[in-house]
Length: 272
Image (cartoon, rainbow, N blue to C red; front, side, top):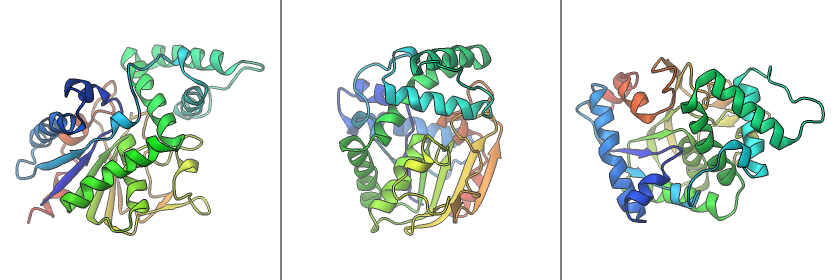
């Protein structure tokens, strides 16, 4: 079985560690992905390559929410409203900067510094990717190139990588995979991702890309990036939504998703 991985947010550091080489960055991530997979009990499978695209989205260190550019603040505020089930509302006359700063404080109080660091990675990269232009095209094409070269039976896409992968399959109809696995996916996130997808959802529904045979989605119950956790209600062709409980503080890492074992029975079907 050939498995290709697609990474999520916050992976620009591997580009720096790899001396500015996306190939080296991908190699650094590959060893970790396989260790996580094996720690989860699936010793008979290995990822052959992790498609790397982070260098197309960010250069340099992220900025805290109070210093974000307006597009990033919009991502942050729309996202936080959903995290709190729309109970966190903007005060009358409150500026976007003030609202983003207030919500950052609320997030810090509720989930701690780890969640705030997560927001500092999530918002700029999502805003840059969905802003269109070269970053979006280059990221999508980088993922498509790896899938085309490796011809995987399985593609495992984590976090923002699930958005890039979804769009890559639609943009490149020649791509094929027997199984797409999305982990901690924000694909269904209203006002942030869902309405900005390419192709646009039709009548409130997205769809499994034609080159994908099966699609399984996995989300931790506390993952604040996977809102909504279930994709079947908004994407035709999602076979199953699986829930796991990995860590309420470390709720989004690919290490915990691959290591939790929830995928093992589904991936073993492709080992036989």
